[in-house]
Length: 150
Image (cartoon, rainbow, N blue to C red; front, top):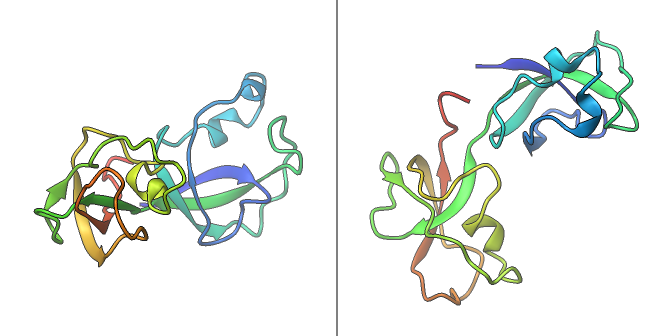
């Protein structure tokens, strides 16, 4: 399901993804807040279309203004425990990892997914980008389906 919202002009490109962070301090007096603050906080979205007929609107948060775009909930690439990781199954993230220098860290602690929450796996992508997990976890990279209520 697509939704029309406003995003900063630098982000307003089809295919761009972002995690909606909610209201910023500059939003309180904005006349466009209802068009901007209409997504689910903490969810990942993909821009599917930029409304070409729309104009660039002034914004207290985005220095180059905002544009109207269509977005849809986006799937999330993550690392999960290998055991039981197959398309159609449900899985949770393995847990926090302190090793921020690891090439897999952004997949072990991805933006847009929560710990202790089950997600359905839409696709198994294979080996994670790291050579060896520093926490000795057996991990597989998968894609979580976008939540239906996003």
